[in-house]
Structures are given as structure tokens and as C-alpha cells.
Image: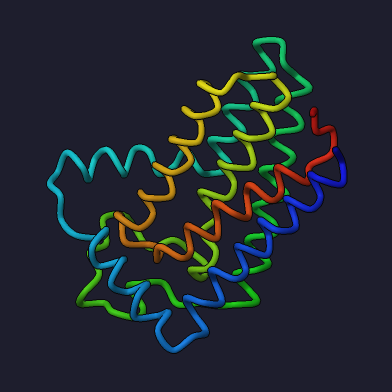
Length: 196
């Protein structure tokens, strides 16, 4: 079981790197990423703006800390600690990758064509930390709590919603968030204490 988790984790991590490389370092990648960004970043109205502004911060370390505190207060200290630790390591890995890759954010590459709904975050664009952090947290917490498939599907929907919000709000390209989702999933798969 451990070997299978390690293989899956390595494949997911490699997938994150491949998505980033294809989007940044190939001839067609930036154009495709830009077209997908333009589709997702378009104006959908004030209700959609408020929804995505609200949901996006669920991928922050602050939100992970609050969720961990809630789990701990509910008597799930082990799950809280493991999920927060996984989210924190994922954040650190993402920040390291950002410094290595230094991909400009959409607004830097196309200021006139990017609709910025929130303030520009610090750091470079690839990978997106918010979906990575949330995905690592939700997957480790779900495993530790022994949640069933319905709850896991709901958490996965939340992960994808946060990822989509980052593109909609104008701060990441689609490949950034796809790589973030894969990175978070890879860390969760490799995280110690995995239950079968």
C-alpha cells in the first residue's frame, strides 16, 4: 500500500510539473493557456464576482489554520495537526517552485486584457498555492477522519471551486491552478500516516 501511495504521489507531482512545462515552455502552451484564461476571466456579473471573492480565500493558510482549529476543538486533534502540516508543507513547496519558475501573473503579461477583481497577490504565478494548500488539507483531513465518498466528493468540489476562482479573479492562469491541484494531491498521497 505504501509503495502504491508513493507511486501515485510521484505521478501526481510529475503531472503538476508537466502541466507547468507545457503551458510555459512549449510553443503552443502559452497561447492555449491565454485563451482559456480569457474565457474564464470574463465578466459574469457582480454576484459571480462576490462568490469567487468569497470562496478564493478558503485556499489560504489562514483558512487551513481555522479549519484545523475547528477540527481540534471538535476532538479531532490528530486529523487537524496532520492536515495543517500537509497544507503548510505544500505552501512551502509552492513558494519554492514560484521562486524557481518566476512566471509572470496574467496582469503582468497582458494588463489591458486581464480583469483583476482582487488585489494582485505577491509572488509569481506558477503554481497556484491556494488550490494546492486546500487540496492537501482536505485530502489528508478526509483520510484521517475516514470520510466516505460523498463527503470526499464535496471537498473535491470545494478544491476545484477555489482553483477556478483564482483564474476568474485574474490572478492565475488555468495551468497554474491545474498544477496546484496536482501538487496538493501529490503531497496528500505522500503524507505520512496514510490510512489504506
